[in-house]
Length: 143
Figure 1 (cartoon, rainbow, N blue to C red):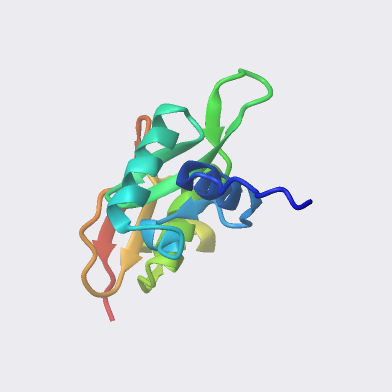
Figure 2: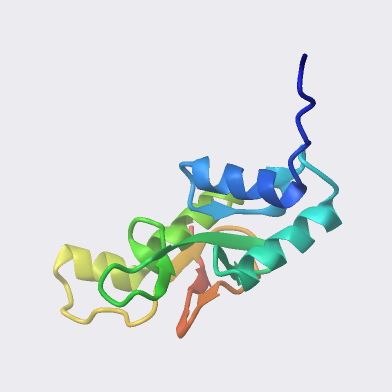
């Protein structure tokens, strides 16, 4: 006798895919094969409420983990917020590079460190990416 397996809910399938994924940043199209765009967005909102993921910006979600020191949710991305922003830019296929301030610091021409993560993007990119009190700064790349 074969037992009929109960089909998993969309919530369970999306959660499983997030947990198994090597990526720490997700956009709704990553789950397009699982369900309708509106259904996926609804599930992602529920996962945000459950603190399994966080919303970084319009249509951009990041995996969370529990910080072992504080017990609070924290970004799972290697490199924290900066790592999550870099993954987001790669996932959205936005050409980017380091800002002039970062290049000057890395070359030893200045000792000033930029407080907020800043990225030089080529082309059009108008999204805001935020996590708690951190916000990524985007400026147009020259050349």
